[in-house]
Image (cartoon, rainbow, N blue to C red; front, side, top):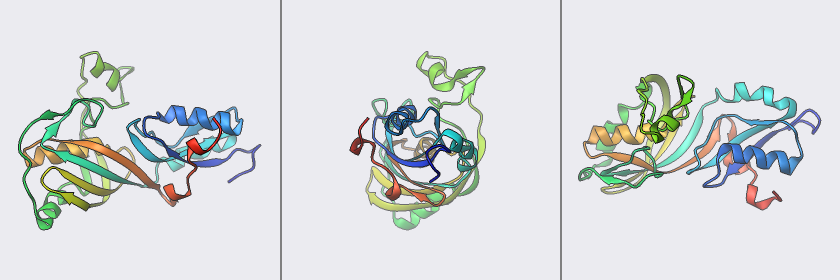
Length: 218
């Protein structure tokens, strides 16, 4: 970490329910800095590693955003939500199949490497100057085109058949885990959404090195 005057690169374990902006504001108050920003948003319902740069170190954030990321994602099959995560109540779609490990490997092989992915309707992407999630909440869902993303690793950590599967994901910039949950559900023909998400690493930085905000004075 750099000195206080030159700023710092801080690793935060973002709590559940916090926006990334709230975590940045906590850092500003806790470390009494005027300027701070983060290297990649985490949704409020996600937890885990958030890299925050303060003062002059905010210039390093652009590079940090390009580093590969690691997530642990719990996907629930047989249901769908409007946001592709747990923000909205799940709607029953169909019966989730019981898969063997070999069958899971075959399914996940379609989502590895460089793939095309359609962002979720409730994304923070801007469409004609407005956030897609704002349009979606106003009943004006934007048509978000698919775009290329990279998945380095995708493996089953735990499977509780037939509805719940925990995945370990290594991916590049711009990847939406919510979209992966949706797309796996669509491939299986039963629906799927992201029930829980934790980011555990960004490049060489890990959540085990991170500060717990609740442990410090706000």
